[in-house]
Length: 167
Image (cartoon, rainbow, N blue to C red; front, side, top):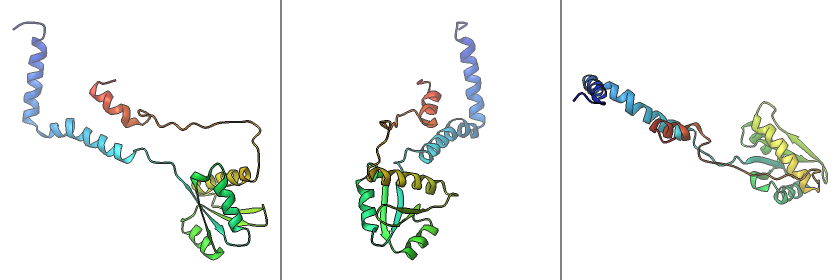
């Protein structure tokens, strides 16, 4: 047996005997990468888009503000509630809401947000855009948005097939 694969078969047999002598290598070579891939896949799985949680301070224009948010194009990503000022500020301080909206007249609003919290800054921008468009603002440049969540965009999606030689 001095053929083309003789050297390879001897090398493979020697490596298998080494694995038999040190069984912990089996864990580190085969089990650990699979467990790591499983853990990373669970930790960084796709999750649905976040919704902005806002509270509207109760008053004469609170219901009108809530209706404006509900008829805006962005209504699906905004969860709004009406509460009294004390409860709204307390819940905002505890992180239950990202933004506090205080209506100051028919179409005048005061936003209370925390610039140290990224979700609060994002909520302020998103809610302001929703209220402005619900009030009749027209964008000067028409645009459209397309969401994309394709397999393979995460690291783990191409790591495992690459390790298995399926790329």
